[in-house]
Amino acid sequence: MTATNSIERRVIRYVIGSVLLTLLATIAGISVVNTLFEESLLTRQMQEERSFIMGNINPDEPYTWNTATVQGFYVPDSMQAETETPEIFRSREFPFSGEAEVGEKKFMLENVPVNGGRLYIAKDISIYERQDVAYKRVLVVIGLMLLGLAVPLVRITSRHLVTPLVYLMRQIKSIEPAPSMPRLSEDGVDQELLVVVRSLNRFLDEMETYVKREKMLLGMASHELRTPISIIAGALDGIECRGETPAADARAMLRIRRAVSGMGASVQAILSLMSHGDLASDRVAPLLLVQEEMKDVDHIHHRARERVRLHESADPILLADPVLVRMLLRNLIDNALQHTTGALDVIIEATWIEFRDEGPGLPERYHSALTARPIVPTTTAAGLGLFIATLICERLQWQLKLIDTGPDGTVLRVIFGTASAAAAANNECEQPRTTVATQ
Image 1 (cartoon, one colour):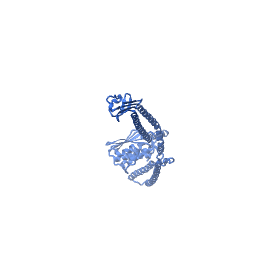
Image 2 (image 1 turned 90 degrees about the vertical axis):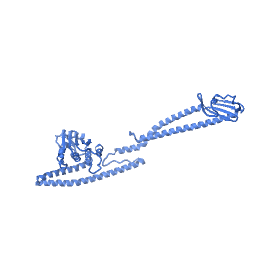
Image 3 (image 1 turned 120 degrees about the horizontal axis):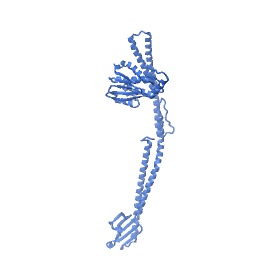
Image 4 (image 1 turned 180 degrees about the vertical axis):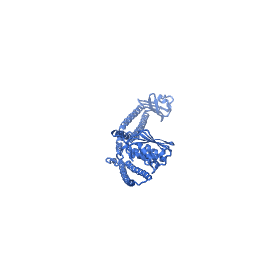
């Protein structure tokens, strides 16, 4: 796992931290116990030395006792003035009990009054100090060895702990949106993760059921829409066959036929957006489609023909679904004319088509639809045209980009897919060039 905040790294940090704290607490505890044991041992030895010296002295005479590690001295009260105290005891106040350094050695001193005089004892504890330093070094070495052994063990353990999560993550990551999605396996899943697996599988079941129900309703709705469209188209055919239509009514009927054809194409486009699989492909000329849409804009928006200005520096031929391309261009033109009062410049280049309006700018709430995956609009009308445009571009594998927006207007650019342009170029090499316009 390469994520910075992965579970594996977190487990490693926590376990190593726990091991380190435990190790430090253990070393500190052992050091304290060793110190207490050493003090207790020295106290007992000093008591034994004092008892030994007191058992061998004459209360009326000075007594000196020297060994390799102990110096003892006793002086009666009556002889303190004329008896010289050894130098090791001379510089200390009386009574005194504690440690003192003399040269390179360290002594435990005990200068105490006894019956009839004073007793001085000095025990060399340098060997204990050296042993204590060596003991602490050994503890540090052992601690480092244990820590060095703990790091690979923690890594191995964390990997074993995270393995079920990694396996589950890979299963979830492999699921692609589709009408029928694979379910997560429940074999060998730990009890804690089994709840997650079953919940996700149940969620996928509900999603598939929901999608199937929506597709069924969409199919029924499209059937119900196609029926009146067919009836209207048939009635228009019958009226035209009689040849008795006045010229003014004929122009009105032509607009009706265009509206019926556009409605049928829109229904087919919506079905194409909601379906999976390959789209219908044909050679499409965006310039010709824009010109045809400009013929009918006056019937939808007042004086719209005067507001639309077409600038073509190229006439690209693309291989795409003509119905979806027509619906895309219609939505973008209608949106610009509906929400602005100024001019609309439509600029066509070889690889893109751009729409520049003179309006107040695109509201902030619609920016996410152009910078992320299409999101269903929050209301039934506001943003619906832009939402449909983003869906069409996604289906065609084109790009809809927000170039600029502000108080002077908005600039939207549709970038044609390279596959559409390449396929059209290959098709053009194979047959004579003809421009197909879908009515």
